[in-house]
Length: 350
View 1: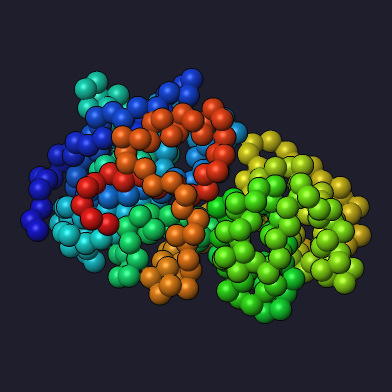
View 2: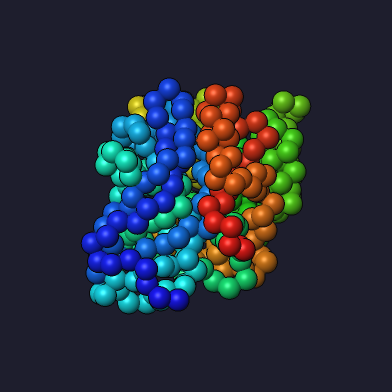
C-alpha cells in the first residue's frame, strides 16, 4: 500500500458526535493535520466503555465541553506514516487510544476529543503512553478494539498483589469487574463475583469465577463469611463505582486484607465507615487507567492465545450507522442487558 495524504493535510471521515441534551449524530469531520511525527489510521472497529463514557456523557465525570467525541480504544489500518516515524508501515494493523484533533468538516468547529476514537479516521503521534502499537496475530479487530478494559482489570489485580489461593470478592461485574474476575482467576485465586444481574454473573462464571452471588437473592455478607470460614476475603474489589457499595466491601475484608477502589466514583468526595476499615487494619489500593503499554500487550496476547475469552463480554456489535440510537438509548435508559459494545467503521473484514 502507498501513502494517501500529503504533509499538512487533514483527512476526512465520520465521527460519533455527542451534543448537549443527549443527542448523537454521525457527522463529517476532519482530523488533525498529518505531519512528520504522526500516523494516519482508517478505523475498522472502536470499543465502547459503557461505564466511563456514559459517566462522561451524563455529567458524572467532567471531561470538558460539548460537542464531544468519546471513545478511547480503537483498531484500524495505517494509511500514512510520517517521515520521522519508525516502527510502523502502511497497512499495519494497530490499536490506539486517542485522536489528536477533530473538526467539523463544514464549519471548522473544533470538537472535544475525549479521546475521540469513535471516528472512521484518526491521526496521532504513535509514541507515548496513549499512542499506538501493532495488534498481535490471532485476535480479531472487533475483539482487539476492547483492549483497554481488560487491561484496567489486570492493572488493578497487579497493584493489589493477588496471589495463588487468595480469596477474592468482586463487587459488580460490569466490564471492569469482569476484567478483574478474569485476571484474578488467571493468577490462581478463588473468585466470588457479586452483582444484581444474572447475565453478567454467568459471564463471570465462564471467565473463571468459582462462585457467583446474586445480591437480590442472598445475603452477600453472610455468604462471603461462609465461603471464607468466617474470616472474610483477602481481597475485595469494589467495581461498581457506587459509593453505596463501599461499606459492604470493607465489611467483607478479613483482618489485614486489601480493599481495591476499582470503580470510578466521579467528582466529589466519597465517604466510608472509618472504624470498619481501621479495626481491620486494611490496605487500600487505588488503581487508575490501564497500566499503559505492557498491560495492553499482555491482555491482547492473552486474547490471541485463547487464554482470555474476552469475546464472552461483547453483547452488542454495531455498525457505525446504528451507534447514535444505541448511545441515546443507553444514556436515557441505562445499559440494560448490554455489557460490552463495539462499533464497526469499515466494511473490510475484521
